[in-house]
Image (cartoon, rainbow, N blue to C red; front, side, top):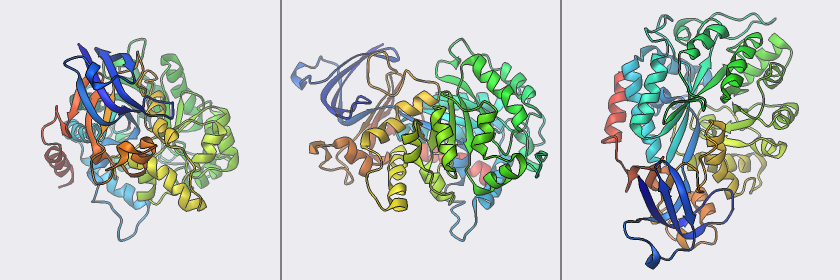
Length: 461
């Protein structure tokens, strides 16, 4: 179906300038023409007016959908650490069934759509029954996540995680998975690859029109280095992205040095994991050599500043990574909030607090992290810009809220949106040429807050 929109203001991607009166045309799920400077009097009849600032669709490069159930229940106001939070997360993971997982993921992905997210990277490791035995369809939960994203109207890259060990003893002996962790493991990387072979993808890595499949190595704590090449072989065969949790906690670094005599980044580099199709998530506790290694290998880094703050993880060296040559993407990870504008803002603000200096990232860099870079690291390089042949993903941010009033006439409206805008300012969302959100209301999922509440109560009560 052919569509047309007329955007009051639009950031088209990469260029720092915002264009005015942009006529945007699409056929099916792709854009066909983008023409700035078209006055309202010359706009064809039947064109949808987009008042505010329109951006390319936002890409959430790192999500664990079921963590959404912990918002407000694991705030940690009385103290605690990442590890005490993890105990609470495992309690929810132990309760999930394929049906309850689908309901929670669908509502969570709908919340993402309301926040302007048109594509999500779902880092998925809850593969099996609570006792570790496979479902009748070994990929049951992954397929339900893909179904949930489609029903919420967004695209998904299912980042299926290899998870084999519960850490390592000094000397490199893996600890066996125990308790809830048994749901995560396939035994060996070869068994993981065999399960992945049952996910039928075409030559473009597509499992469905809205879904692609990638690989994940959960972390250096969870996959022995000798098993990593099997995962990378699958990635190379399918030209698929690979994502890894990297150096999220000092304990991870200490255990890795004790077990392998190297930093986690060095272990991954030696195993052939780093490279242009690879994305390291968090990368919080790096040494200078790690930064150089990631930059030289053109590895992407996905920062999740709100989750990293929520869990008191620390502040990663985002400016140094960008300077070294890493593309930066953004994720909402544990969903303490689902708001990529806030994630981008805090990637900058956390550095201001750390160094007591302003201006580490220009607004264009923050916007690219939230759009084109995120899509690219999820295996959707044809998304994240408003240009012909790109996916028809449009996110319109209203400029009439108390937060953004007066921005329409500002010299740099893009900077103003990233300085003060929130997910609540998203008014309209088009994903793959389809209206998903109109006037702040989800068109496919009725009453998203009620759906979230029901899905969360089902797995926490």
